[in-house]
Image 1: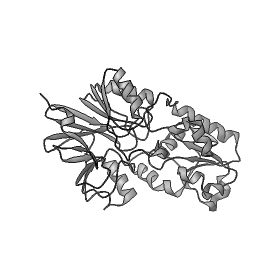
Image 2: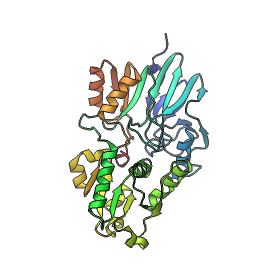
Image 3: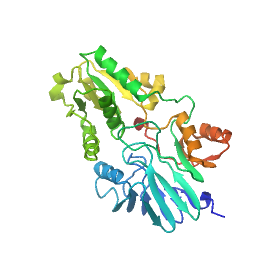
Image 4: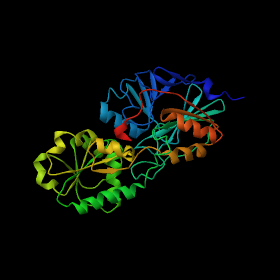
Length: 338
């Protein structure tokens, strides 16, 4: 009889721990051996000794935190390859969240568990699409684990932005978007929609855009959004971190249209309180329907939920005939990245 994953996957203070493999997945504090699903700061933390991840995730970690802090020893694993650590066979398969994001597949003595990390099921020209794979236990996020969260088509939201640019040709449009993943996806979607004008970037976004292009993802004409080119920014599109929207940096622009790209823009009060004139509901996380579809696609009789709106998804998974429970891992979830 194969051992149930609950006998070899444990929640410890540092995070989710695989006992036979002696490694953590997305640990919350420095550990000896870590496997990282993707490079967002709540999942990829500095100070680990040995780090295993996709080549793209390791490159992003080095860019964001420096070579030494990204792991004393860094080992890339190509998607689809298998590495065995202490009798646990490990694969990385696409999660569809951001560049390099992967689900962690663990096979041990005939039992399989898959940890999703963060993921989405929508098309994204900047990363590989989520790959379903049958397993015994599926460990999922639930950032948008409530029925109210049903994301619209991203191309429709891009059309709203382009329509506003046409309607207000003299105003600078400033879009708040997270530096890793959201920025590059927005640019790629704009290019797909036919927008071939220069896109101006806040300094905090430039490094990761260059890294994406180094990995073969074209983003077109990108320019620094400095106050020195203030006249050029009239009628232009500027991307900036969400925190910069309410900062003096944005206020120095001429009568800007403030926008934000996030799944949280579904909540009107959140957009209003943030002073967002043009909310764009574009998310890099699965919405309610995608979470439910993924539970079906993974064919797992048991669902574990790491973070987010756990109780609603537990109830839904139970109605779908699955056993479900919350791991209640504290420390995950970056609102601006959603």
